[in-house]
Image (cartoon, rainbow, N blue to C red; front, side):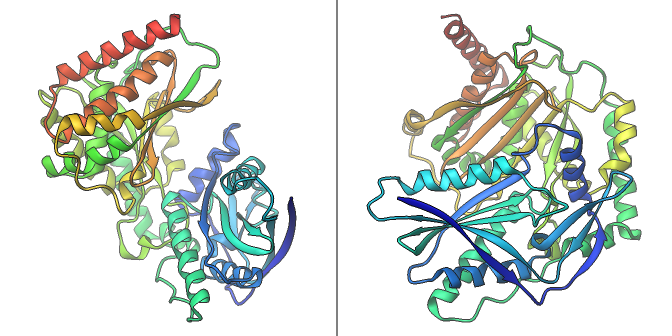
Length: 470
C-alpha cells in the first residue's frame, strides 16, 4: 500500500528584502506570462537518494538549511500593475513537504513513484505570487526515507542551478548521516544582488555592448532565411528526441581532435545539418548562454540563462572550417550573453527576427563525460543499437521555427529537436537526429565532408518518408 501525507518544513534566520527581477528571471517571467504552453516547461525536476539511517526530521532540517542558503528558493514573485514583477525574499516561513510511504509488500517500483511525484509537480506548475518556487517529495519505505524528489520553478533556477541544488542537498544529507557539521556555504551572488548590479553602471555597459552586437547580427539577417519546405501537419510543431550512448562517447574525442570544446562540436554538427535545409549563405540562431563566466556567478542559484542572437555562415568548405567558425561565434555569444532582453525586443521585432532557430547545450557542462571511445569506428557504431527515438511533444504553436536542445546524462545524451513541420516534416526531424548521431560517431575518428553529411541526411529523409507512407 502507498500512503501520501505531508509535513511542514520550517525555515528561519534568512535575510528578508525585495528587489526587481534580474535579467534572466525577466526572460522566464515574460515567457510564462505570454506563452500559454509553458506551465510544465517552467518546472525543473530532479531526484536523489537519501543516506540510510536518516529520519524524516533529519531530511526536513537539511531541506530547511538548503532554503536558508539560497534566497531564490524562498522568493515570492509579486506582479506589478505594469505587468512586471518584483522578487520578495522571505526571511522565514514554512513549506509543505509531500511524504510518499510505500509498504515493503507493495509491488510498485520506486522508479514509477519518482516519476509520478515529478510529473505531478510539473503539471501543477507554481502560483508564484502565493507559494514558494520549490516542492519536495520524500519517498519512504515503511517510514524510512530513501529517495527525495525536487521540483523548482525556472524563475528561480536554470539547469545548472538544479545541479547545484542536488549537489548541495547530497552534501547536507551526507554530513547529517555522518554526524558532521554542514558543509560551508559556497560564496555566490544572490539574485537580488545580481539585479542591483544589472541596474547599475556595470549592467548598462553590458546592455549597450549587447545591443551593438545584436544590431550587427540583424544587419546580416533577412526574411525567409529558413523557408517552408513542405505542407505543415497538425499540430504544427513536433519534438523528436534521440537518446544515444554513442554520441555521448564520441563528442569528447571529436572535440580533442579539433582542439575545441564539446559545445562547439555540437553546434557545428547542428549547423552542418541546417546547411542541408537552409538556402544560405547563413542562418540566424539564438545560442543559449549559462552566463556563469565569473567566480561569483558560478555557484548562483537563479535563472541566468539567456539566448543571444548570432548568425552562422554556411559557406565553409570543410567541417574543420565550420568548427573554427562556430568556435568564434560561441566566443562572441559568451561575451554578449548577459543583457536585458526587454530592451532589445522592439529592435528585434522591427527586423522580423523573432523566430529563427535556438541552440541550447546543457550536456557539455555535465561532469564525468566519457573521454575515450572504443578502438574503432565500427565498435563505436555498434553501440548505436541501444539508441532510442521518441516523439515526446506535439503542439500547435512555438516561438521558434527550430529548437535544438542537448541534455541527458554524462553517459547518455538526449538530442531534442523541436521543429516547424513546414520546415522539417516529421520524417525529416527523425532523419536530422539520426544523421546527427552518424556524424558525431564518425567525428570521433575522422571528418566527413559536408557533401557526405548532406548525402547521409538525404538518404535518411527518403527512408523515413517511405516509413511514414507505409
